[in-house]
Image (cartoon, rainbow, N blue to C red):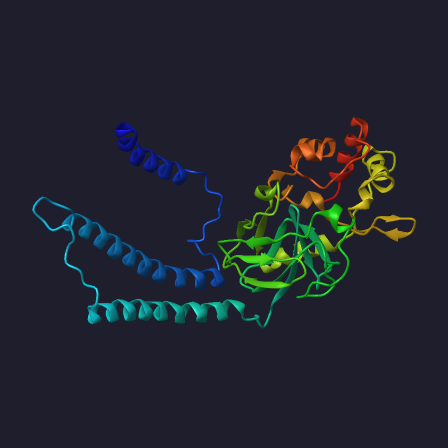
Length: 369
């Protein structure tokens, strides 16, 4: 036991060092890259040092008193008591209250600043949390994509956050979730009505995504780059895979991206393997959940019904909650057995696809640029 006791501090220190050596996943809340994240950091820094000072003072006094007033031979069993000392008792009641008031004033002010609806040139985006991916809807631009949120640099983005499931029937207008039946199958089969949390630490704080409720978050990037976010609320088996990317672009690059996303998908050449895959897509299980702009079945456009919109799939860098690069091999593995790739996946293929069908579907999906 003595040997274990001596080793414990070293093992703990080694664990801390190992955690610090983890690869940088670009989720650094201490590295603000926008004005809203900067407001949080500006509040965090003084509050942290106040808390640190109180911690060391309190812990230091505990250690001091434990050593100074420890039991020794020849000393009374009980050291002198200070109970009933009115000055001390009033002092240690008022001082913490003053500290809390001093912390509360800038905290409340920052909360109101972050909650204020931005004005001027604002981009409205609706983000819907599914198990386990993010639907991104630009209502003013008529764009729906998944797992990647593109924004212009230097402009505030007003994000309306909704959770798929009971009370969610799509987001046709900015800033509000539309009440209605759940998308897709009945709630017991969809499994979507759970709480998520939207968090991209370099650009903003956390905001819960709650079924039946619309929450809002404002974020803004100061410079072009890709910022990693994730769901920060446990939401099921594949919660750890529920990530996303915020891609900040210059206004010119963002406008070019918007124009490309607004275009219809281009049908592959007749007789090609990709054309066979498109036929399988339109006449198989895929259209039960997925939509592709520009394609129709029986004269009716496809409507996304619980699955990501695939119109410009290959313009994205990732899928499965933005944890897998979009490659031929990964798409094949997903179509072969979604549950093997993502624990608890709601994508059910019955019957399973043959290898010929997988090859054709992947060929078609890789034309969606």
